[in-house]
Each structure stands twice: as structure tokens, then as C-alpha cells.
Length: 257
Image (cartoon, rainbow, N blue to C red; front, side, top):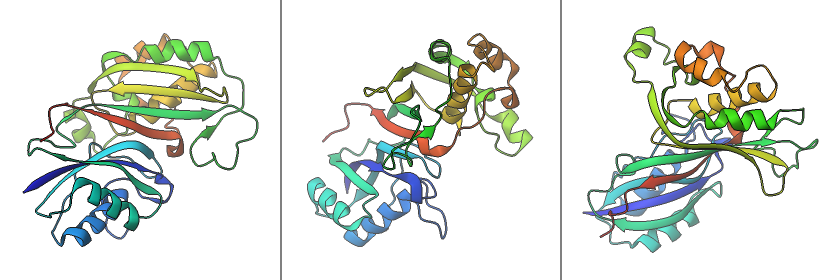
């Protein structure tokens, strides 16, 4: 048996998220279909994490095992030849049996993009949230820094839909870094956050809360209060998915053959 790691980029606009769903186009489903065609095996492709419908990725990671004789480079070339152009295999590597896209992951980096100009260029509208109105960016930067550390993120996550399940969930997460800054061209605000793992909609809720801080509806000091309240109705809105990117996944280094 042989083991492979794929680093994957995709435009999530036309997909119902990463995870395979019946009768709906998904990123995982597209890649698995091609891998099964190439190997003639019932290949599985666990990912480092799920992305929701409309969310993009620059560095999602998937892993699979196979008895195929194809090399990593051959898998990369064949996948890119057969996949829709909205999905690209950035790299393919052969690994040892202990590597898992999900369980070997030590952290993920996400970025939310807020376009500040008056008119969104047509080549960008799928990848940003447009907000041309006044914002207190310094207050937003101060608030973003308050996400760093181990906190209970109940106020910043979606409900499971079940009160009992919500009570049983561990809502603590560790954030290693969190910052808000202007893009290099100055036209966008980028909220970039690096953490061990994330709850569903967590980054989009965090970004929505920063937007409320910028609008003066919340203050940076309110972030600490939101941790204590554990009430998602008190934080900012869940911003739309198109501005969110999974930038990269951080894995243990010792996974190669």
C-alpha cells in the first residue's frame, strides 16, 4: 500500500462545500471520482477540514492510500488534466502510513477579505465581501488581537441545531495569531487567523464581529464580554462565505518516506 498527500486549491463558488454530499457537486466528490477512475479502487480522501458552500481554499490538504503504481507527479498531472478548472492540485507527495490530512494537522490559517473600494472589480466579486462604508480600522485591529489565546468561542460559532448537542460540545479553541491589516494594494482589509482548529462558521462570525466593531456597534472590550456571555446572538453576524479562504494547513514535518 502507498500513501499520498495532496495540497489543493479551489474556487468554492459553484460547489456545495468540501465534503461529499449526495447529488450535489462538492470539491471532495470531484477529486474522489477522478482518483477512483485513475486507480480503479474505492479511494477515500479525508481532508484537513471542511469548508462550507462558497468558501475557497489556497492550501486545503487531502490524503489517500492506493496500490496504484502511479507516482506523485503522475497523480498531480492526471488530476489536473481531468478535474474541473476550479479545482487544482498544487502539489502531490508520497508519504508514510502515519500521515493523515486530518489527524496530522497542527493548525489551520484562514483569511477573510473585505473590499473597501467604491466599485468591486468584476474579477474579484466572487472572492470578497464589499463594504465601502466608513470603518474604525484601528478599533478592529485592537479587537482582532483579543482573539489570541484559549477561549470559549460559543458566541462565535453556529449551533448544531440541537440544544443537547450544543451543551455537550467542547467550545474552547486556541488561536495562535489573529490580525487585521490592509492588503498590499490598500484596497482590501484582510482578517487572518491561525488556530489549532475551528468551530463551524467561527471565522465568519469573528469577521462579522470585527465589522460591528468597525461600525461602532461593538467595542474591542466587548470581545472579552462575548466570551463570558456564551451567546451567539450577541456577537456580530455570520458574514457571507465568498470572502473566506483556507490559506494553508500546518502539518507535522516528519511524514515523508
